[in-house]
Length: 219
Image (cartoon, rainbow, N blue to C red; front, side, top):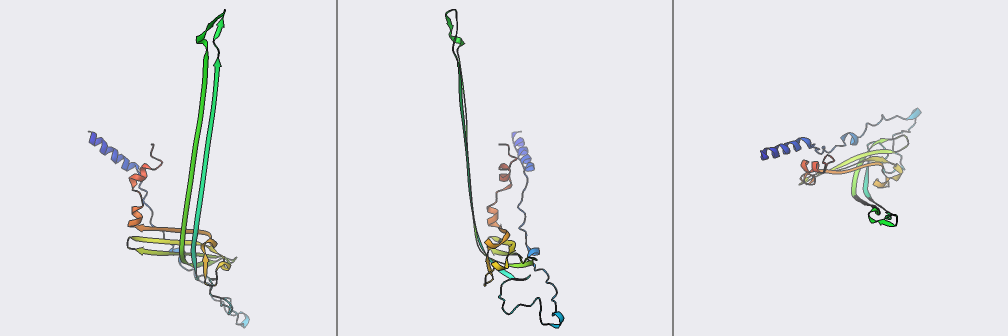
């Protein structure tokens, strides 16, 4: 009977635990595919001017849809927070023994005291660093000149696969003569570094472990 109850408890835990399997790594195929370029406009009034032509004095920096630009990842973040609270309160009340007709009644004396204290301390520290390089593709040129870029890099290793993805907006003026720019210049940057395979699975807790550390655990 005891073994049957234990088996039923394990089955109940299995049913209550939610299998939060990590979703597959999303791809940026839709974002990294260059948008179709507008039709080339011919010369105006028989002239030789072409709006899509590259001027003789221009360089190789990315300015148009479909161009590529190399982004150097220089992300470093550090955050630290600490909070502390201490509260203490003491109080006491004393009543002397009552006397009557020259006689004192010792048992009527009362001493009341109360003491309360509270102390709390919390510390949070987080550090992140990401370096490297990633070449992205210009997806769109906004009317104000901003370049919407996106790209990804996939590395297949002997123990799994790793992905580096980046999307955001760039100013053409921030791109140097070598067609490179720092990730610190990317506005609304969305940078992700993830992977899948044996190493990623080894760093992920099992479903039962996730159940015991979830908010559903009453203890």
